[in-house]
Length: 265
Ligand code: MN
Image 1: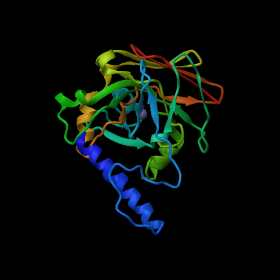
Image 2 (image 1 turned 180 degrees about the vertical axis):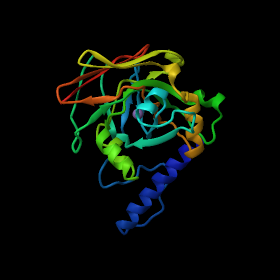
Image 3 (image 1 turned 90 degrees about the vertical axis):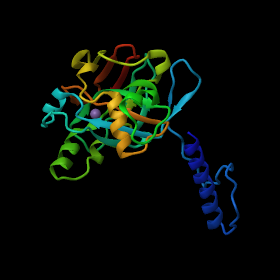
Image 4 (image 1 turned 45 degrees about the horizontal axis):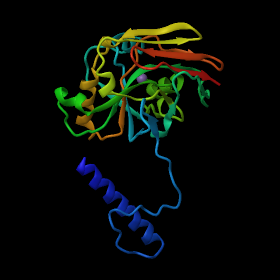
């Protein structure tokens, strides 16, 4: 925590010095100064259920092929190979209030737009090489999310051995509901997770079918990247992903979390 605060204030100080240098008025910046930026960039946040506070998002990590049946439908062998991760840009978040249906624009460039319902873990702290038995101590709370995917582009890029980016990391590709603090909801074990399109259930599983648990995901991810407060992790989707078209309504459910619903527009 202290390290992060120091880093951020160093960063802020450096940004101030850079701007000052550009303006030709170099001077020593003090650590607590707000950097003078030529414009502002909004901080992505997610509402916290039962609180006026919002959760500031630092990074969005996603785990791939974390249910055996989904790994098979994607054409891979679901043995316990190490989990793999990708990221979405922070501003891909589209918050949808419980009890509402969020308008979700059909994205450009795709003709095969897929849903993936997922449990999301949101971190209040981080570290490197976090042991599995301490990993859940870093969880601030949980949310229900959608990892929306331009499947045709993801597959085409995969076939060409190019990065998946365009298939996974695009505007509004991460619809999500409010974060429920772990202090309120505890942890998850064998809850039902499901997704319906226009009232027809498409995806249905229980969380105990997950290959790498949330604790294992945090631990593994922290070997690759130092994790920090504000990081969120989409934990993978069950089998039977599929396409939606304009006008379709997606309804996601996970026991003990509020429903998440969007309409493709
Ligand atoms: Mn996914």
